[in-house]
Length: 392
Image (cartoon, rainbow, N blue to C red; front, side):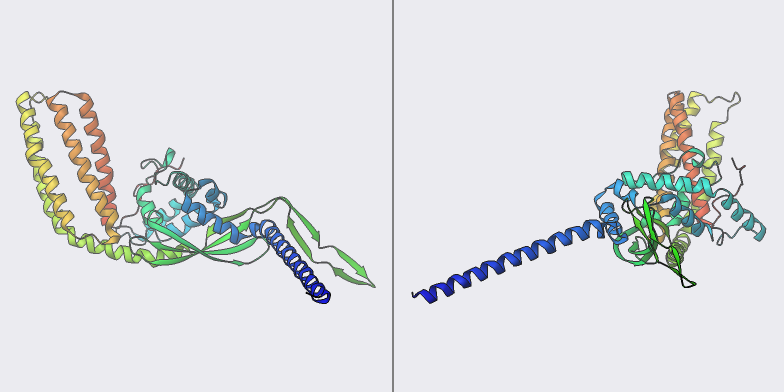
């Protein structure tokens, strides 16, 4: 190899190494810029916050989910949307009564929304639906919260994916989420309002100055020095979701009620007759059943009342249940199951002279009555409350 060829190869090698070093430096600079932009800008955007909340929801990260939800604000607006037509389909109310009940639900708004936050907080933490306690426990406010939750559709709505974000200001945005209602399989895209609630910020600009008698003003900018705090503060089209899904579920429910009405009516007559027989078997001049009576009553419950309850439930279970009637069908099953358990404890109570078993029978009977009242409200499109209690 001559000297000129060798020098050319050395020069080419140097140029190649120089280009490689420049390329590596370029890649490093781009990577560093990307990391800087990601952590300093993208992680403070509402889009990042919403992707984070979806990932956290799917993975069960309760703290991150709660970080991006302002539950107090969300429930206030959602409550107004839910109760705006709560009494529309109640066939038993006059116009004056309907107005009275609507005003009542406005008065208890604060207590009801506090209960909703309690329910949602528990679901975020444990992925299970509960009913609120305190004054909303039972029907202290005349409200069946379980029935109200079913009408809200929240327990059978599945969140699917984050769709995107539209900006409406420096600290305002609208995000979209796809979802589906589990029973009807109606797809829906929720629109939610986001707000950046970060408090550590600094304003730059916005000052006025005067030149030759003319006033000028620099534009102002706000920078969040403490990062960002994007939260969902309202579900903007929740009312639209209810309007899209509820009519389908109501139609399903009406079809199921019609299909089962004959079974329910026939067995109501049977149970009325059984109740008369049960009362007759317990009659005693002293007001206390004899041992022979106790055995007769136990035999009658075991061989007539309980089998009749189970027979009615078998016939009801043979009727196809449309998706929108699942809640009613489950309530009927629960009522039957609870009633059978109550009768079983009652038998033990009277045959073993056990106050504990009689108390358990009474407790289960109360639970059954709650189920039956709820069933009646659903079947007759009744308002959630019929008696207005005093507001605490």
